[in-house]
Image (cartoon, rainbow over all chains, first blue to last red; front, side, top):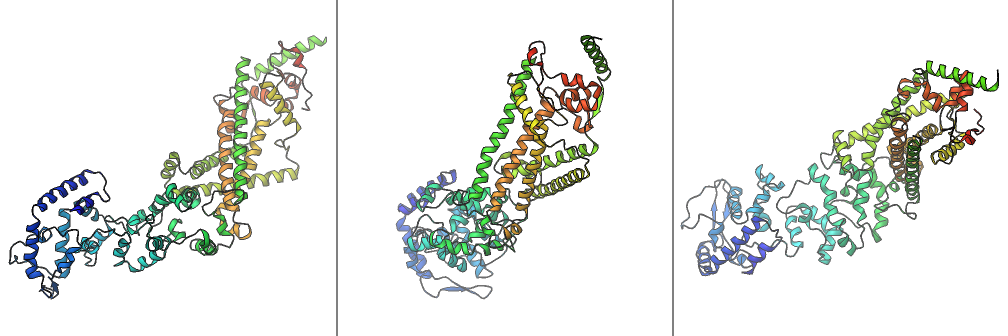
Length: 364
Length: 270
């Protein structure tokens, strides 16, 4: 029964709602502990009909709704100790009360609401998601709880972590393939790396925002910065955390930080964000062996927004490096010059003002 | 008439004329100068207001200014517009001066000379009470010249780097890319320095300095009180009023009774 406890601990934030969940879990635990035989009994009873392959019902639309449940599916399920009617509410009576479903989509949707009875917080989050938006507009292919989590064979979603991208890939195939080839996806799949982001680290899990919205786009530097400004994490891979600060202090980053106006969609760039140069799901390595190729391609990257940029142009961007005498001597020297001259001039003038005031006072 | 009595007579005459001219003003700046200053003042303020938030993009004041002006795109638009106006003004100014020089109509009063450097030393010695002799200035004192050349040279740096930042693609077609970030560093820092010099030095000299407090109106009205003119620009004053020349040029030291030795003036070529 230890799944219950781990369920509520996983990704836990100590909120009131979580606390309530834990209480619920304990409550269920107690109920079920005393009731395991009853659960098994109910499953047996349901399976006496629903265990036979080919059991189905014809809906008004003429579609066949399969009613067969493979018993083995429950074996791997985190819900194997729930009663059937905990989710399929109102079906305790046999024969079941008559119900009317227009089509298969409506029939399936009727079970979607079942999850919220226990998982209310996550359910609420989905109401803000781009997926729910599709559902609300009547898109029958829009994912519901069970589309991602499964139904009878419901398992912990991120074990292993790569399972998440497989889940998303059922609908987002091309993106998943691009991700798999990216520096992040490759490390996840080939090395089982625990630091690289999986889909849900950037897109979140239940309250998935519309990635084409302006708010989302303008927030992407923060998303990348979550890891790439983390010194401890980046230190493990010898990556610089100056990538965020250097971006923000240059033209593009400053514009983005001020919330560049005018960018409505991904196709209407007003300022270069991280993803415009590095890619989105296909983010490649830019250090080590990959650096020359990335560099060679840089002019083309610039030309996406700056048509007519010459081969000299990419050097106008210091590639996230702080200017040093070796890497950008001109920039370094200009900066050094002003570091000296500004205090010298302004300090000198201030001193003269003070002397002037002093002499004026002395004269009186 | 003995020497002494002649001196006494002159001093009495001077006192009378001083009395008569007490409320007098003399013209110091032409209409053109005043308009130029007003325009530069407004444009400079506009440039600083829209430029500093871009340099200090993290600061709270920057966010406030940018959102008050309607976003970063608007701020940049105003900044570039002001920059182009400033460039045009600078160009017109330079062309006018060049024309005047060619026509021989310019006195080149702003050109710094050896005297200006001597004046700095004299003034600092005076401030430090190493001497009671005050420098005697012509039309423009070394402080005014410093500001003029500062804004002219600084302005030229701002104009060239500003245009490099405005047209990075065109510039990097014939110059290395590193010019652009270098121009950015120079533009931001030069702008900051200009701002600080104006805020600290210029505003002190024309508003807060005890001699002018609560502020000199000369650059707006074009006129300066005759007394201040005598005091601050004695060499030019002496040229304007030759009959008072001896008297004006004689007064160089404070507290003449205390240190009569220092009354002997340094040899000025005024």
